[in-house]
Structure formats: C-alpha cells, structure tokens
Image (cartoon, rainbow, N blue to C red; front, side, top):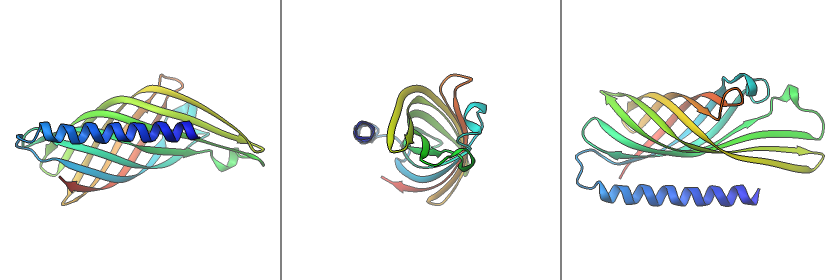
Length: 184
C-alpha cells in the first residue's frame, strides 16, 4: 500500500509540474487553459472483469491547454476503484482493482459538445485481502480512451470508453463523468 501511495503521489507531482510548465509555454496561444476536476462512475464491459468487478467509481483530474479557438491538448489522470461484486465475496476475503491512468489527448469542440481521444499508460493494482493477509499485484499497461461530452458553463458531463491492457485480460469500461472546470 505504501509503494502504491508513494507512486501515486510521484505521478501526481510530475503531472502538475508538466501541466503548469506547459501553461507557461503556451501563454501566447489564443485558446484558454483549464483544470477540470470530476467524479466518475465506471461500468465494466470486458468479459474477464465484468463478473468480478462490474462497477467502479473514481475521481478525475484533467489539464486542458488551449491551442486555438476550438481545441485543447489534454493531460488526464485520476484514481478509479472497482470493488469485487458482493456475490463473489466470502467471509474474510475482499478484493479491488485500482487504476491510475496518465494519458495525453486532444479535445475538439463543436459548439458546446466535444470529442477527446486519449492515449497513455495506466498504473493498475489488484488488491486482495484473505483473513488479514494482504496481497497486491501491480502492473503498468497501455491505456486509451475516447471521450465525448457536453459543456454547460463551468460544468461538463461526459461519457467515455476506456481500455487498459491486452485482450482478453483487459480492463475496459464505460465511464460517466460530471466535472467542474476552473479557468487558469
């Protein structure tokens, strides 16, 4: 647990340093720069994980760097947890699957609607506890997503398909997000 937390903090620091450094480099751009903070609900679609971890939740963080009037480069991270389905749990046993994605993308706007493909890496941890004994398996895998949404003033609503890892052992889910946009 300590290693995962330490790695998450390190990734977050790098994410924010890169984001704020990029804002200073893009200061002369015509577009606007934003930080987007949101809550996610995930519905698993991959057959391998669907029966074990059917739903999940998470918090997302996204930096948007303006590159013109109708587009922004995006840097996305967050934390998503999928908890073992209660019908699969037995006494003294619990399990969760955690994802920490770090992806780069491009958001194209069409009035209030947007489309955003993303690609990067996901730092995944499969956590299991059996009668007090803890076992964690961590892996880093290729991750990609396609997100579409609607912006209403400072709030945005979106849906995305996100895939992490190779088929048939991939974690794929549909994510529903409500987020708040902060102009920088």
